[in-house]
Length: 294
Ligand code: BEZ
Ligand code: FE
Image (cartoon, rainbow, N blue to C red):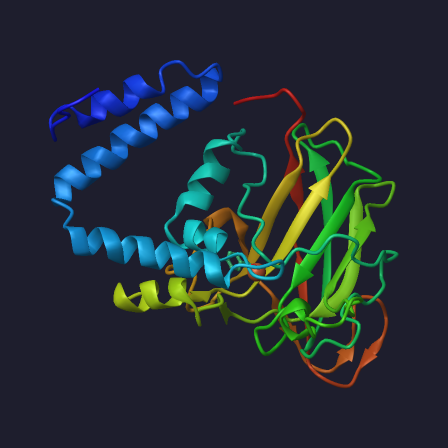
């Protein structure tokens, strides 16, 4: 291969990898190279812009470690994460829609019984959450596992406070529970608040340069698993939040927006006498059976 010109270089790269034994890799890389080259031609990419992009991606790599994944944040803020989630989770409209996992899920969160308080001292107004997990035909799903995690009143997750030197983090406002024989669940936690995604790195600089803000509307995260059903990773968003229509990671779906109802001090759903105002959220989830596509 010699004398490759700007007109023949795309074909030359495709030909160079045409012998790959991995069919899927060849398909994906062929498309990627075609789109990258088209992009460079379309915007007439300059050499300094090319170098700027290399330096940007280098910065994204440098700030990434076991606790911070700036590449995923980049994917999230460019809409690639939600596009990938959506096109891989097509299901009937009766089913609960999926959203991104996000960077703050932690494996091995503590187990709770229904009715227990998962906040473990996290700051925030008390909130009582209840709902039911059902299958597509309305069948209650007993014994489904529910992972739940959320921010506190300052807009931080427990992992964002934890000392990196500390090997055992203290879990707050996250936990794992199972649905009851009628598919229902209920737990106590705190009111989630809106928060900015980590924006002190290259992704934050990118958002700023693009005139975008880093905020996500207040939400609870859920990851629900039941035998025979497709896993569901999703959020429930707080109705009325000012960022519902400008989520930095494009995750909001109208079907996932729900009312957190404010109550004056008094009897909570579990009978506890509350000395402060508290909130309740009721939200049901519908899972798609394995192998069922719309
Ligand atoms: C989250 O909701 O936890 C989240 C999702 C994407 C990027 C940052 C945070
Ligand atoms: Fe979140």
